[in-house]
Length: 115
Image (tube, rainbow, N blue to C red):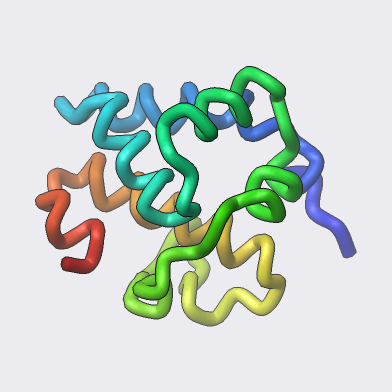
């Protein structure tokens, strides 16, 4: 079963990540730092992916690398434990959701980035 979000352009969800963070006093730069930390994109590559409106599937498929600390991302997003998500792409999306949630909840960047 393929999820609708897989085909959705990353660029359509990206502003929601920023809005969620900014409503809680955080910044677009912090959102970008989290995304780059997770995916290995640099700022220029991230901007290009957003401009090209690539799908979530392509966004993660073209990511230079996944951060080796992703196994440290645990907890619940939308009532689902991120470490228990079986579909690899959905798990990557949930990891990103979890990191943005942590940012919006006021966690320190060092903790979000598992340093």
